[in-house]
Image (cartoon, rainbow, N blue to C red):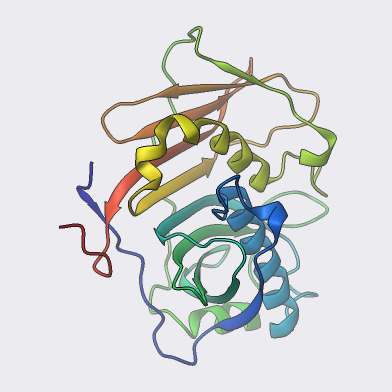
Length: 258
């Protein structure tokens, strides 16, 4: 399946956004040296915090949660290597923003990402307006100023089956908001990838949409399926489907698949 095409937008100019750099560490790669999806997710969290501090909005707009993450692995990053990360806004509204991060490595790795971040009130736990100065800063790299949420994935899981994976939530999976950290979801996705190694042999897109938080006292099951679009996963408790994920092959203009 290679019908999907990469469409993540480029930065508006060479100077746009925030750039940082660090080495790929052994704890972030799989047994073959490939930078794992959960490692990428942690990179996105780390550069977000660096960017927030560097831009000076850590006091006015300090708290954000991720609603969706899109990761497109065009050319895998491997250990040992060094990566350069560049982050910029590709769409914004008064309460949320799409943030692009491009990850390149010295050895030619290329990973494109886009995450839908929601600004929240730390005390109330509800969505909050982005400060006027924060909005102006984000809007400087995009002309999409009325960003709306639209789901990309089907959040309705198939019926329960013997293939459901019981997934224990560990203490290390819980973050400062007392929820399962978004990178921990990607660790669960990695459990399924060895059985779908063909997806990793070509450019692929991995998406997670977080619909409701998971807490440490819940019993989590991961349901898998394939409706013709690649590997699909649903994170399910007795109450609801908390998240959906999809991994599928894509085409990218920088890769010759012939």
